[in-house]
Picture 1 (tube, rainbow, N blue to C red):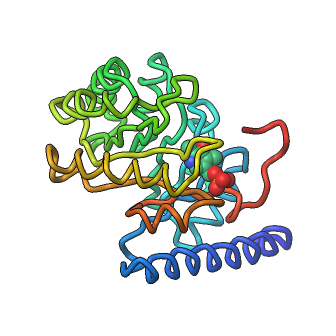
Picture 2: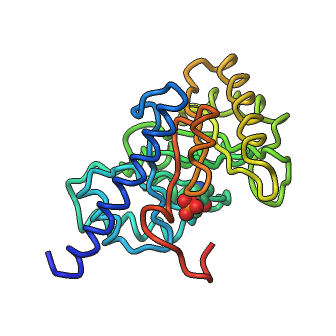
Length: 246
Ligand SMILES: *Cc1c(COP(=O)(O)O)cnc(C)c1O
């Protein structure tokens, strides 16, 4: 390993330990165990070598928000660490015309927010499986829009039942639960409280859909208080992203 690599590895190891401590402390305060909260490292805008170093540290759940960037990075990481059993999570807005590509590299799509996207992903996953590009089913979280603002992605809360039924009834998609981003300008505790109630309703109809993906660098503690089972962390692990980046 070259010297810059080992310095970066140290940096990532320190950051990872700190994030794991934040998760454990928040879980403990909520009377929950640290193993009840998955950590997805969001590697968007960072290079595949960073993803490789994270896998060396045992981080195998990696997230991306742009299909094209992710597809390339997944290929690069496969060359860098062919043995690492990485699970890529798509957490960003997804257009239907990217369904075929995302089905090649993603283990889980956390951002399914419309019936038409779910249908496109179902077909894409079937095609990818027939082409030998994937084996297992495609895990899906439906993304909720807590404030109902259609500009920012996510399905309005009153559309979640229909969307979840569509995913659960499809042949290739496996409904795992719910995801959301706290809306800007909304009190995160109120946002995650409303999300937790939506997750409860979802579990009533789909008892196996137990995942609740909520919480990022700035709000993961509040999300864990409100029942998050998966936090998606970029900045606190990898550092600040450039100004031009989302
Ligand atoms: C970028 C991103 C994250 C990570 O955000 P940080 O604040 O850097 O931790 C989480 N979820 C989604 C959907 C993202 O796009």
